[in-house]
Amino acid sequence: MFQKYYRLTKPGIIRGNLWNTTGGFLLASVHHIDAWLMTATLCGTALVIACGCVFNNYIDRGIDAKMSRTSKRALVTGEISNRNAIFFGLTLGMIGFGVLLAYTNLLTVAIGSLALFLYVIIYGFFKRRTTFGTLVGSVPGALPPVAGYVAVRSQLDIAAVLIFLILVCWQMAHFYSIALFRQDEYKSAGLPVMPVVHGSTRTKLSILLYIVAFMIACALLTVHGTTGYVYIIVMTVISIVWLLIGVFGYHRLDSVKWGRSMFVFSLTVILTLAIMMSIGGRLV
Image (cartoon, rainbow, N blue to C red; front, top):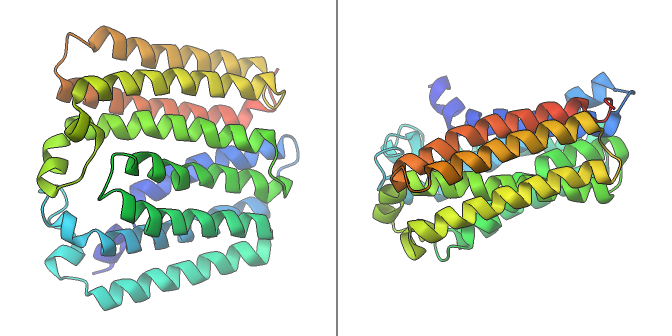
């Protein structure tokens, strides 16, 4: 049963977001890393994200029942009751915010609260009604690295805004790629994602445009003076590779295979970004 509750928190999402949170934290820290503050920030953030994922599972249990990929989730099968899931989510959230409140700052707590509200309530509403649900969902997904950054700096500055924009652009390309190769599932569940409503061609073009925007936003961190030249070289190169994979496969692969290939490489891109943010402020 422990495994059922564990999977209810969507550990893959937590791990990915913690990579980004670590990147934001270390970027802000530069040469003075507070190990205890970093531990508290990551633990608190992980618990808040877990809370959001549990509530997202609760809200989406009807949709999940319609898709083969999610039809075996514990809330769909009844292995975990709705009441227990809500209690579990509330417990995770209270502990997470307690840690952030005790060891970080009010701005970090506010960002965590905003991300949770946007993900559970606003995204939960829009994803069922409009293709803009993906854009709405990208906002809370872009906030964990900002939380990591402000946990150190205690302020929202231009660098924090750029980190947010970078993550929004990456997520849009990433999630549109998922929507392409899973569009049949989303269609059967009645979710109005971009390829279902507007077709694969428009979705593919949007992905390429978001990759270009991602590359520009990444470069602006160096232009602003937050990161060094090693960071901008690495991020520019990997962004170009991502773009070229999309361009060269545009007519050679069907939409499902193209979307999957773009999704797979997007994981390499975000891992590289997290690493380069972690060390980019300390390199020339």
